[in-house]
Amino acid sequence: MSDTPNLRIPGPTPVPPDILEAVAHPMVNHRGREFAALISRVAERLKDWFQTSNDVLILSASGTGGLESAVVSTLSPRDRVLSVSIGAFGERFAAIADTYGAEVIPLQYEWGQAARAEDVRQALAEHPDVKAVLVTHNETSTGVTNPLEEIARAIRSQESGVRSQAPSRASGRTDGPLVLVDAVSSLGAIPFEADGWGLDVVVTGSQKGWMVPPGLAFVSMSERAWRAYENAKMPRFYLDLGRHRDALPKGQTPWTPAMSIFFGLDVALERMAEEGAERIFTRHASMGRMVREGVKAFGLELLCQDERYASDTVTAIKCPEGVEVSALRNTMEDEYNVVIAGGQGKLQGKIFRIGHLGLVEEEDIRETLAALEQTLAKLGFAVRAAR
Ligand SMILES: *Cc1c(COP(=O)(O)O)cnc(C)c1O
Image (cartoon, rainbow, N blue to C red; front, side, top):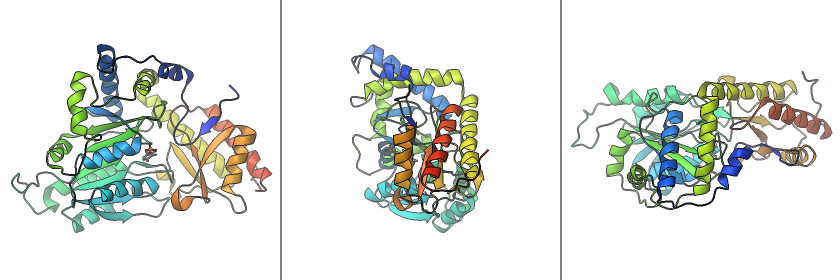
């Protein structure tokens, strides 16, 4: 299909024809038996991808709505939260907490770097009253994947010993800090373990690794997070996760859901189960490598200098001197039908990004790299003799 663009942005990602067809399913009663069976099926399957035994709640919202639900369902105004931020989405998570009156303690890194578990451990030692840590698994704006397992381990280790207060229900302090995770552009594409890594709230969005259109956010809550929910005082209504929890056993959502996306998700999860987690993770790892090796061969530089943390779902590339990001993107789109992303926030005009998550095969990357090579040459960049 030559008129369908090669959509190489980190979401919304391409939706395969069978899923597009499923999205066109006629409406049914959202409080009826057919839809109840559908919700139960997809919610159960999502648990495997989250690697959790807790419920996965499905909100009709984009990823940001999911992040907001995490904040308002676990925190109170004036709670202190540690924001571990390595880019634009880390800043957004912090801004949500700040908007609802949390006291945000920033732990910021230069954009392009990954966070270090040791820094998180130290920040928590300096601020023993931190209620929650906000952390991005895969920072889509910079193409960096944080060592989330290590970071979570550093946070969990604050529960015993380091914190002098003995846990007591009366003091309200029975648990260590909550770990609130933005896994919007990682879940379903790269290895992830909500329970195994000790994560409390995990959020992802339908338009990233799941091959379905935008419109749904998936959120899991640990038992510890539900305990926090009972005392959380931030205002909440539409994004109240307790209402979603209570509706789920009835096969419902508290409000009218974005049903069309549910129909697509049902097919997508079936497809993903057929491919299997191992193969999906391996495919993303290999796509990530292919993009990085390809652009480096042209003489380009990655924004993420330490490739141990380079993302396998999105790659951020420094735009070479003398080339305009907008001209590069427009030429690729107009002449090669390949759509790539620019930079966000302070990286606007400085980098461009190639998305490789969800529906992506070698052929898509080959085509993208070929278009990039020819476009760079056209715009006057001396492309190093490649491959
Ligand atoms: C896409 C994305 C989001 C959510 O963005 P929405 O536009 O609200 O879906 C949040 N965090 C990360 C890391 C993302 O990639």
